[in-house]
Length: 414
Image (cartoon, one colour):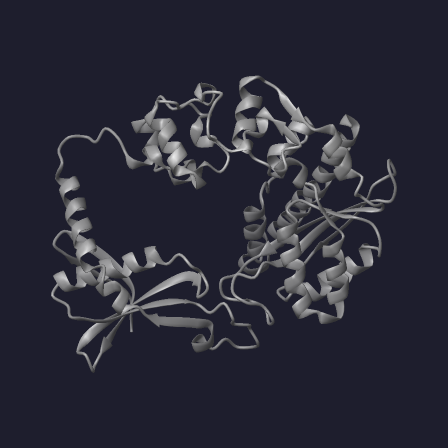
Protein backbone atom coordinates (compact mmCIF):
# COMPACT_ATOMS: atom_id res chain seq x y z
CA UNK A 1 0.00 0.00 0.00
CA UNK A 2 1.26 3.47 -0.89
CA UNK A 3 -0.71 6.40 0.49
CA UNK A 4 -0.80 9.80 -1.24
CA UNK A 5 1.36 8.60 -4.14
CA UNK A 6 1.97 11.42 -6.63
CA UNK A 7 2.36 11.13 -10.40
CA UNK A 8 3.10 13.73 -13.09
CA UNK A 9 3.08 13.38 -16.86
CA UNK A 10 2.22 15.42 -19.94
CA UNK A 11 1.65 18.55 -17.88
CA UNK A 12 -0.75 16.73 -15.57
CA UNK A 13 -0.38 16.00 -11.87
CA UNK A 14 -2.33 13.81 -9.50
CA UNK A 15 -2.05 12.56 -5.92
CA UNK A 16 -3.81 9.24 -5.35
CA UNK A 17 -5.33 8.32 -2.00
CA UNK A 18 -4.03 4.74 -2.17
CA UNK A 19 -2.25 2.69 -4.81
CA UNK A 20 -1.62 -1.05 -4.41
CA UNK A 21 0.57 -3.27 -6.54
CA UNK A 22 -1.48 -6.08 -8.03
CA UNK A 23 0.81 -9.08 -8.52
CA UNK A 24 -1.69 -10.98 -10.65
CA UNK A 25 -2.22 -8.16 -13.13
CA UNK A 26 1.28 -6.73 -12.71
CA UNK A 27 -0.33 -3.33 -12.44
CA UNK A 28 -1.25 -0.65 -9.93
CA UNK A 29 -4.75 -0.73 -8.45
CA UNK A 30 -6.08 2.69 -7.45
CA UNK A 31 -8.34 3.26 -4.45
CA UNK A 32 -10.24 6.55 -4.18
CA UNK A 33 -11.29 7.17 -0.57
CA UNK A 34 -14.35 9.38 -0.03
CA UNK A 35 -15.95 10.74 3.11
CA UNK A 36 -19.36 9.62 1.90
CA UNK A 37 -21.52 6.64 2.71
CA UNK A 38 -22.40 3.70 0.51
CA UNK A 39 -26.00 4.95 0.26
CA UNK A 40 -25.11 8.33 -1.23
CA UNK A 41 -26.58 8.62 -4.72
CA UNK A 42 -24.43 11.21 -6.51
CA UNK A 43 -21.13 9.52 -7.33
CA UNK A 44 -20.30 11.16 -10.67
CA UNK A 45 -17.54 13.32 -9.17
CA UNK A 46 -15.99 10.23 -7.60
CA UNK A 47 -15.87 8.55 -11.00
CA UNK A 48 -14.22 11.57 -12.58
CA UNK A 49 -11.54 11.60 -9.88
CA UNK A 50 -10.62 7.98 -10.57
CA UNK A 51 -10.82 8.36 -14.34
CA UNK A 52 -8.41 11.29 -14.25
CA UNK A 53 -6.00 9.43 -11.95
CA UNK A 54 -5.86 6.45 -14.28
CA UNK A 55 -5.21 8.72 -17.26
CA UNK A 56 -2.26 10.41 -15.54
CA UNK A 57 -0.73 7.13 -14.37
CA UNK A 58 -0.95 5.64 -17.84
CA UNK A 59 0.61 8.73 -19.42
CA UNK A 60 3.36 8.37 -16.83
CA UNK A 61 4.03 4.88 -18.17
CA UNK A 62 2.39 3.00 -15.29
CA UNK A 63 0.18 0.01 -15.92
CA UNK A 64 -3.18 0.40 -14.15
CA UNK A 65 -5.24 -2.53 -12.97
CA UNK A 66 -8.52 -2.16 -11.14
CA UNK A 67 -10.17 1.01 -9.84
CA UNK A 68 -11.94 1.03 -6.48
CA UNK A 69 -14.21 3.46 -4.68
CA UNK A 70 -13.86 3.34 -0.89
CA UNK A 71 -16.80 4.68 1.13
CA UNK A 72 -18.20 4.38 4.62
CA UNK A 73 -20.69 1.58 5.17
CA UNK A 74 -23.94 3.26 6.19
CA UNK A 75 -25.09 0.07 7.89
CA UNK A 76 -22.07 -0.04 10.19
CA UNK A 77 -22.73 0.28 13.92
CA UNK A 78 -19.75 0.70 16.21
CA UNK A 79 -19.39 -1.94 18.89
CA UNK A 80 -15.96 -1.86 20.47
CA UNK A 81 -12.83 -1.79 18.32
CA UNK A 82 -13.50 -0.94 14.67
CA UNK A 83 -12.73 -3.52 12.00
CA UNK A 84 -11.97 -1.57 8.78
CA UNK A 85 -13.51 -4.37 6.72
CA UNK A 86 -16.83 -3.69 8.46
CA UNK A 87 -16.55 0.11 8.42
CA UNK A 88 -15.55 0.52 4.77
CA UNK A 89 -17.35 -0.54 1.64
CA UNK A 90 -15.02 -1.06 -1.32
CA UNK A 91 -16.58 -1.18 -4.80
CA UNK A 92 -14.84 -2.12 -8.02
CA UNK A 93 -15.94 0.49 -10.57
CA UNK A 94 -13.39 -0.26 -13.28
CA UNK A 95 -16.17 -0.97 -15.77
CA UNK A 96 -17.88 2.35 -15.16
CA UNK A 97 -14.60 4.22 -15.54
CA UNK A 98 -13.81 2.40 -18.82
CA UNK A 99 -16.83 4.07 -20.44
CA UNK A 100 -15.50 7.54 -19.53
CA UNK A 101 -12.07 7.30 -21.17
CA UNK A 102 -12.82 9.34 -24.32
CA UNK A 103 -14.75 11.98 -22.39
CA UNK A 104 -11.93 12.41 -19.87
CA UNK A 105 -9.31 12.70 -22.58
CA UNK A 106 -11.43 15.30 -24.36
CA UNK A 107 -11.83 17.34 -21.16
CA UNK A 108 -8.09 17.18 -20.47
CA UNK A 109 -7.36 18.46 -23.96
CA UNK A 110 -9.86 21.31 -23.58
CA UNK A 111 -8.35 22.33 -20.24
CA UNK A 112 -4.80 22.29 -21.60
CA UNK A 113 -5.86 24.45 -24.54
CA UNK A 114 -7.47 26.93 -22.19
CA UNK A 115 -4.26 27.17 -20.15
CA UNK A 116 -2.36 28.04 -23.32
CA UNK A 117 -4.51 31.09 -23.98
CA UNK A 118 -2.62 34.37 -23.64
CA UNK A 119 -5.69 36.56 -23.46
CA UNK A 120 -7.41 37.02 -20.12
CA UNK A 121 -10.83 35.37 -20.11
CA UNK A 122 -13.74 37.78 -19.96
CA UNK A 123 -16.37 35.53 -18.41
CA UNK A 124 -16.93 32.35 -16.45
CA UNK A 125 -19.64 29.70 -16.50
CA UNK A 126 -20.83 30.74 -13.03
CA UNK A 127 -23.02 33.32 -14.75
CA UNK A 128 -25.68 30.64 -15.06
CA UNK A 129 -25.09 28.94 -11.70
CA UNK A 130 -26.64 29.50 -8.29
CA UNK A 131 -24.87 31.63 -5.70
CA UNK A 132 -23.53 28.60 -3.84
CA UNK A 133 -21.81 27.43 -7.04
CA UNK A 134 -20.05 30.71 -7.87
CA UNK A 135 -16.27 30.59 -8.17
CA UNK A 136 -13.97 33.04 -6.38
CA UNK A 137 -13.57 35.05 -9.59
CA UNK A 138 -17.27 35.74 -10.08
CA UNK A 139 -17.11 39.29 -8.69
CA UNK A 140 -14.09 40.01 -10.88
CA UNK A 141 -15.87 38.94 -14.06
CA UNK A 142 -19.24 40.46 -13.15
CA UNK A 143 -18.67 43.54 -10.95
CA UNK A 144 -22.01 44.97 -12.07
CA UNK A 145 -23.96 42.28 -10.22
CA UNK A 146 -25.36 43.89 -7.05
CA UNK A 147 -25.09 42.26 -3.63
CA UNK A 148 -28.79 41.41 -3.82
CA UNK A 149 -29.66 39.96 -7.20
CA UNK A 150 -31.47 37.17 -9.00
CA UNK A 151 -28.79 34.84 -7.65
CA UNK A 152 -30.25 35.43 -4.18
CA UNK A 153 -33.71 34.21 -5.12
CA UNK A 154 -34.87 31.40 -2.84
CA UNK A 155 -34.04 27.96 -4.26
CA UNK A 156 -33.08 29.37 -7.64
CA UNK A 157 -30.48 26.62 -7.76
CA UNK A 158 -33.34 24.18 -8.32
CA UNK A 159 -34.52 26.16 -11.36
CA UNK A 160 -31.37 26.86 -13.37
CA UNK A 161 -33.32 27.29 -16.61
CA UNK A 162 -35.27 30.14 -15.00
CA UNK A 163 -32.01 31.67 -13.81
CA UNK A 164 -30.51 31.40 -17.27
CA UNK A 165 -33.60 33.03 -18.82
CA UNK A 166 -33.32 35.98 -16.42
CA UNK A 167 -29.58 36.46 -16.92
CA UNK A 168 -29.76 36.15 -20.71
CA UNK A 169 -32.50 38.81 -20.64
CA UNK A 170 -30.12 41.04 -18.66
CA UNK A 171 -32.42 40.93 -15.64
CA UNK A 172 -29.97 40.90 -12.74
CA UNK A 173 -31.17 43.11 -9.89
CA UNK A 174 -34.19 41.99 -7.88
CA UNK A 175 -36.05 45.16 -8.76
CA UNK A 176 -35.57 44.49 -12.49
CA UNK A 177 -37.62 41.30 -12.44
CA UNK A 178 -40.91 41.99 -14.27
CA UNK A 179 -44.16 41.62 -12.38
CA UNK A 180 -45.31 38.92 -14.78
CA UNK A 181 -42.90 36.02 -14.42
CA UNK A 182 -42.85 32.25 -14.09
CA UNK A 183 -41.11 32.13 -10.71
CA UNK A 184 -42.43 30.29 -7.66
CA UNK A 185 -44.78 31.89 -5.14
CA UNK A 186 -41.96 32.00 -2.58
CA UNK A 187 -39.73 33.84 -5.05
CA UNK A 188 -42.55 36.17 -6.06
CA UNK A 189 -43.18 37.06 -2.41
CA UNK A 190 -39.49 37.71 -1.94
CA UNK A 191 -39.51 40.08 -4.90
CA UNK A 192 -42.75 41.81 -3.86
CA UNK A 193 -41.64 42.55 -0.30
CA UNK A 194 -38.33 43.93 -1.54
CA UNK A 195 -39.68 46.08 -4.34
CA UNK A 196 -42.57 47.55 -2.35
CA UNK A 197 -40.85 47.63 1.05
CA UNK A 198 -43.81 45.65 2.33
CA UNK A 199 -44.57 42.83 4.74
CA UNK A 200 -46.74 39.86 3.90
CA UNK A 201 -48.61 38.82 7.04
CA UNK A 202 -51.52 36.41 7.04
CA UNK A 203 -52.79 37.03 10.57
CA UNK A 204 -55.62 34.52 10.33
CA UNK A 205 -53.29 31.73 9.22
CA UNK A 206 -50.78 32.61 11.93
CA UNK A 207 -53.55 32.63 14.52
CA UNK A 208 -54.71 29.18 13.40
CA UNK A 209 -51.16 27.89 13.67
CA UNK A 210 -50.54 29.29 17.13
CA UNK A 211 -53.86 28.00 18.41
CA UNK A 212 -52.38 24.52 18.04
CA UNK A 213 -49.95 25.21 20.88
CA UNK A 214 -50.65 23.63 24.24
CA UNK A 215 -49.05 24.86 27.45
CA UNK A 216 -46.61 24.32 29.01
CA UNK A 217 -44.39 25.23 26.06
CA UNK A 218 -40.97 23.61 25.75
CA UNK A 219 -38.52 25.38 23.43
CA UNK A 220 -35.89 22.77 22.53
CA UNK A 221 -32.65 22.84 20.55
CA UNK A 222 -29.85 20.28 20.15
CA UNK A 223 -26.21 20.72 19.19
CA UNK A 224 -24.72 17.64 17.56
CA UNK A 225 -21.43 16.02 16.57
CA UNK A 226 -21.55 14.02 13.28
CA UNK A 227 -18.31 11.99 13.14
CA UNK A 228 -17.54 10.23 9.85
CA UNK A 229 -15.95 7.37 11.77
CA UNK A 230 -18.21 6.68 14.78
CA UNK A 231 -16.59 7.60 18.08
CA UNK A 232 -19.13 6.01 20.41
CA UNK A 233 -20.54 2.50 20.57
CA UNK A 234 -24.01 2.20 19.09
CA UNK A 235 -23.43 5.00 16.54
CA UNK A 236 -23.19 4.85 12.73
CA UNK A 237 -21.17 7.02 10.31
CA UNK A 238 -22.20 10.67 10.33
CA UNK A 239 -24.85 10.12 12.99
CA UNK A 240 -25.85 13.44 14.51
CA UNK A 241 -24.92 12.67 18.11
CA UNK A 242 -26.31 15.35 20.47
CA UNK A 243 -23.87 16.58 23.08
CA UNK A 244 -25.91 19.56 24.26
CA UNK A 245 -29.40 20.92 24.55
CA UNK A 246 -31.06 24.09 25.68
CA UNK A 247 -34.65 24.10 26.95
CA UNK A 248 -36.75 27.14 27.78
CA UNK A 249 -40.07 26.35 29.45
CA UNK A 250 -43.14 28.53 29.80
CA UNK A 251 -45.92 27.04 31.94
CA UNK A 252 -48.68 29.43 30.90
CA UNK A 253 -49.15 32.51 28.69
CA UNK A 254 -47.03 35.35 30.01
CA UNK A 255 -45.55 33.31 32.86
CA UNK A 256 -41.89 33.55 33.81
CA UNK A 257 -39.50 31.47 31.74
CA UNK A 258 -37.57 28.57 33.20
CA UNK A 259 -34.36 27.40 31.60
CA UNK A 260 -32.68 24.00 31.62
CA UNK A 261 -29.50 23.02 29.84
CA UNK A 262 -27.22 20.07 29.30
CA UNK A 263 -23.63 19.97 28.04
CA UNK A 264 -21.60 16.76 28.00
CA UNK A 265 -18.10 17.38 29.31
CA UNK A 266 -16.58 13.90 29.10
CA UNK A 267 -15.09 11.72 26.36
CA UNK A 268 -17.97 9.26 26.38
CA UNK A 269 -21.27 8.74 24.63
CA UNK A 270 -23.43 11.69 25.71
CA UNK A 271 -26.76 10.14 24.70
CA UNK A 272 -27.68 8.16 27.85
CA UNK A 273 -27.08 11.01 30.28
CA UNK A 274 -28.57 13.61 27.90
CA UNK A 275 -31.83 11.69 27.47
CA UNK A 276 -32.07 10.97 31.18
CA UNK A 277 -31.83 14.65 32.05
CA UNK A 278 -34.17 15.64 29.21
CA UNK A 279 -36.73 13.23 30.59
CA UNK A 280 -36.50 14.99 33.95
CA UNK A 281 -36.92 18.42 32.31
CA UNK A 282 -39.83 17.73 29.94
CA UNK A 283 -43.25 16.93 31.35
CA UNK A 284 -45.85 14.65 29.86
CA UNK A 285 -48.00 17.34 28.25
CA UNK A 286 -47.51 20.55 26.30
CA UNK A 287 -46.05 21.50 22.93
CA UNK A 288 -42.37 21.07 22.17
CA UNK A 289 -41.33 23.96 19.95
CA UNK A 290 -38.37 23.54 17.62
CA UNK A 291 -36.95 25.13 14.48
CA UNK A 292 -36.80 22.41 11.80
CA UNK A 293 -38.53 19.44 13.38
CA UNK A 294 -37.19 16.98 10.82
CA UNK A 295 -33.71 17.40 12.27
CA UNK A 296 -34.69 17.21 15.93
CA UNK A 297 -36.99 14.31 15.15
CA UNK A 298 -34.19 12.43 13.40
CA UNK A 299 -31.91 12.99 16.42
CA UNK A 300 -34.60 11.62 18.74
CA UNK A 301 -35.26 8.57 16.56
CA UNK A 302 -31.56 7.72 16.46
CA UNK A 303 -31.21 8.17 20.21
CA UNK A 304 -34.17 5.85 20.80
CA UNK A 305 -32.22 3.04 19.14
CA UNK A 306 -29.46 3.39 21.72
CA UNK A 307 -31.62 3.94 24.79
CA UNK A 308 -34.73 1.86 24.06
CA UNK A 309 -35.94 2.34 27.62
CA UNK A 310 -36.59 6.00 26.62
CA UNK A 311 -37.99 5.21 23.16
CA UNK A 312 -41.61 5.95 24.15
CA UNK A 313 -40.58 9.26 25.72
CA UNK A 314 -38.63 10.35 22.64
CA UNK A 315 -41.45 9.29 20.33
CA UNK A 316 -43.89 11.29 22.46
CA UNK A 317 -41.69 14.37 22.13
CA UNK A 318 -41.69 13.98 18.35
CA UNK A 319 -45.50 13.72 18.37
CA UNK A 320 -45.72 16.95 20.36
CA UNK A 321 -43.40 18.93 18.09
CA UNK A 322 -44.47 22.26 16.70
CA UNK A 323 -42.07 23.63 14.10
CA UNK A 324 -42.07 27.41 14.49
CA UNK A 325 -40.27 27.70 11.19
CA UNK A 326 -43.42 26.46 9.42
CA UNK A 327 -45.03 29.88 9.74
CA UNK A 328 -42.26 31.33 7.62
CA UNK A 329 -41.81 28.47 5.15
CA UNK A 330 -45.58 28.54 4.55
CA UNK A 331 -45.19 32.25 3.71
CA UNK A 332 -47.62 33.40 6.38
CA UNK A 333 -45.05 36.01 7.32
CA UNK A 334 -42.58 37.38 4.76
CA UNK A 335 -40.28 40.35 5.29
CA UNK A 336 -37.96 41.89 2.72
CA UNK A 337 -35.01 41.54 5.07
CA UNK A 338 -35.44 37.75 5.17
CA UNK A 339 -34.12 37.80 1.60
CA UNK A 340 -35.95 34.59 0.86
CA UNK A 341 -34.51 32.71 3.84
CA UNK A 342 -36.29 31.16 6.80
CA UNK A 343 -33.38 30.36 9.11
CA UNK A 344 -33.71 31.49 12.69
CA UNK A 345 -30.74 33.81 12.18
CA UNK A 346 -32.58 35.53 9.32
CA UNK A 347 -35.90 35.83 11.15
CA UNK A 348 -34.74 36.81 14.65
CA UNK A 349 -33.21 40.27 14.00
CA UNK A 350 -36.25 41.24 11.89
CA UNK A 351 -38.97 40.26 14.34
CA UNK A 352 -36.95 41.03 17.46
CA UNK A 353 -34.66 44.01 16.78
CA UNK A 354 -31.66 44.05 19.06
CA UNK A 355 -31.46 40.27 19.32
CA UNK A 356 -28.73 38.63 17.24
CA UNK A 357 -25.83 36.22 17.41
CA UNK A 358 -23.22 38.81 16.46
CA UNK A 359 -21.76 39.27 19.95
CA UNK A 360 -21.29 35.55 20.60
CA UNK A 361 -17.99 33.72 20.20
CA UNK A 362 -19.94 30.83 18.66
CA UNK A 363 -22.53 31.86 16.10
CA UNK A 364 -23.59 28.69 14.26
CA UNK A 365 -24.02 24.97 14.70
CA UNK A 366 -20.91 24.04 12.76
CA UNK A 367 -18.76 26.20 15.01
CA UNK A 368 -20.45 24.70 18.07
CA UNK A 369 -19.61 21.19 16.86
CA UNK A 370 -15.97 22.12 16.25
CA UNK A 371 -15.72 23.86 19.62
CA UNK A 372 -17.05 20.81 21.48
CA UNK A 373 -14.60 18.57 19.61
CA UNK A 374 -11.76 20.88 20.58
CA UNK A 375 -12.86 20.95 24.22
CA UNK A 376 -13.13 17.16 24.49
CA UNK A 377 -10.27 15.94 22.30
CA UNK A 378 -7.84 18.68 21.36
CA UNK A 379 -6.85 20.69 24.41
CA UNK A 380 -5.73 20.02 27.97
CA UNK A 381 -5.81 23.70 28.88
CA UNK A 382 -8.50 23.97 31.55
CA UNK A 383 -8.95 27.70 31.02
CA UNK A 384 -9.58 27.07 27.31
CA UNK A 385 -12.03 24.28 28.14
CA UNK A 386 -13.89 26.55 30.54
CA UNK A 387 -14.17 29.29 27.94
CA UNK A 388 -15.49 26.90 25.30
CA UNK A 389 -18.00 25.58 27.80
CA UNK A 390 -19.31 29.09 28.47
CA UNK A 391 -19.43 29.87 24.76
CA UNK A 392 -21.39 26.72 23.97
CA UNK A 393 -23.91 27.36 26.73
CA UNK A 394 -24.37 30.96 25.59
CA UNK A 395 -24.95 29.93 21.99
CA UNK A 396 -27.44 27.15 22.63
CA UNK A 397 -29.27 29.29 25.23
CA UNK A 398 -29.82 31.96 22.59
CA UNK A 399 -31.13 29.42 20.08
CA UNK A 400 -34.08 28.57 22.32
CA UNK A 401 -34.56 32.08 23.67
CA UNK A 402 -34.74 33.24 20.04
CA UNK A 403 -37.75 30.97 19.49
CA UNK A 404 -39.38 32.37 22.63
CA UNK A 405 -38.92 35.94 21.40
CA UNK A 406 -40.09 35.15 17.87
CA UNK A 407 -43.24 33.52 19.23
CA UNK A 408 -43.86 36.53 21.45
CA UNK A 409 -43.52 38.85 18.47
CA UNK A 410 -45.98 36.77 16.46
CA UNK A 411 -48.48 36.73 19.32
CA UNK A 412 -48.17 40.48 19.86
CA UNK A 413 -48.76 41.10 16.16
CA UNK A 414 -51.92 39.00 16.17
